[in-house]
Image (tube, rainbow, N blue to C red; front, side, top):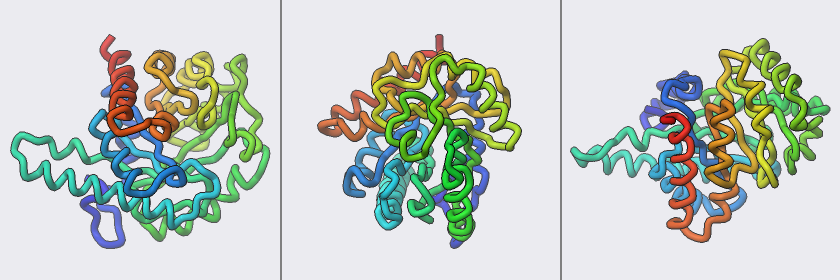
Length: 283
């Protein structure tokens, strides 16, 4: 169990989230990204519960670069409380699967200002192709003491922004990886492994017109001992299928959650995305 069985001031399962991230035996898995700036915390919790129902294996909270920590914290807390309620309800039903709701809530921060002690873990990222010290180590140094104080598990993450890059590429002053930069994608993966990162995240940018090129994913995949996560521009099951077929262990979607007109529409979209992950694994 994660924070829903937390002892005071200390995470009882400190390596649990990292273990889950690195466990690729069950095939590719889906992450739902919820930007706390885009909806009220209660709405965020409702959307997160739909995502878990559909099979998302992790909830990311973050995205916008200027979201204050009180909004991030309120969103994490609302999601955790919703998971607790569903876990408790399942524990009272002998036919229900209580572990279905044992899903980590992970910070995906825009900076050291967007932290919360209610999260299970944080993607502790270096924006590897940034040209600014701030995103290489500056924000990380600012945030590290708070993460330690909160007892939030850090997942060492190499973060590489690929074309088109979107807002994150612009703000992060990233030298974007182009579709033809396949050897460079492998170099970044090697560098991430040598730094001791556990996770390599290839990002096309929130709401990107197209996702990370499969050739970049395929080349990064040649480096062992890294979990490979891909996000940005993944709008259809076909996009998911291509990313997973190229070697992604995790796929992240966020814009489709924000754009869904209602929870039923969201449920249909997310179910199709999750099924696309399993379809590659079973084929």
